[in-house]
Length: 335
Ligand code: ATP
Image (cartoon, rainbow, N blue to C red; front, side):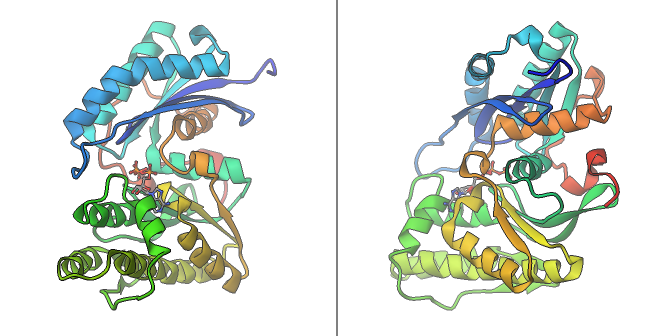
């Protein structure tokens, strides 16, 4: 550890995952610990029950992250927490612990936008400087890149996210949560691609019609494996179409896939082909950091802190509907 290296404790708690991590300003991820709330089978996340889970596990997860990093609490220089977007009751559990630690230790506090966390951990772990980014998760489906001080949106979902589509379909089919990985496995056994709604408006995508039509087909006896294949092919093609247009428009030479759905091998294949067609390199966040984790918050917390962007306690509120294009990202410089 260099003398002037800064260490940040990051707390993630936007939805199902309570995560904590210590990351250094040289980009070393010293620990990454998580405890994930699992809703009862057949149900989505209930915000209050999820927040209850987070309150129960929060302190233990933070202690484990410090132990794994071999860092004492008083050796932490900055405390960061995910302030949004996310489920209000869940966000407040992390914010409360982060505020308590920051005031107890007299350390600076940083509010991190969770979507920017997904992007920055992907940039750190892949080493890609200036990509077009496709962020696909339970809370996001967005195509974005950095321009003039902020991440700007070049296409997004108009209704539900890609993660929601897969999870809600899986729930409708009686599969356990999270549904995305199961849909991927079942799709490998499918052989028929049904015609389903394919909706791209401008450069935005709509998945709700695809969900409704797929559930309707399921109820009328279509084979589950074929439907999983059909949903993936439609949903991924829509995203690929919008991504290809955004790549052509922005002329970026790299495409970066991040967020929990980035784990899907078929989606990677489809988007890597798009990148190839547009003469761009293709990169995917490592599986360990694809889903929600403390490391994304700790690293982004460092970036904010190094640019003097810290929050006084009285302004350290959460923001459940915080868009990524509302956040200044001074560390990217001129774009
Ligand atoms: P956000 O990060 O935007 O707040 P979140 O917390 O739900 O949303 P993540 O943890 O990043 O998101 O991702 C979870 C999503 O990823 C779920 O919808 C899950 O089904 C999906 N997912 C995980 N693995 C796969 C896979 N192999 N194929 C498809 N989807 C997957």
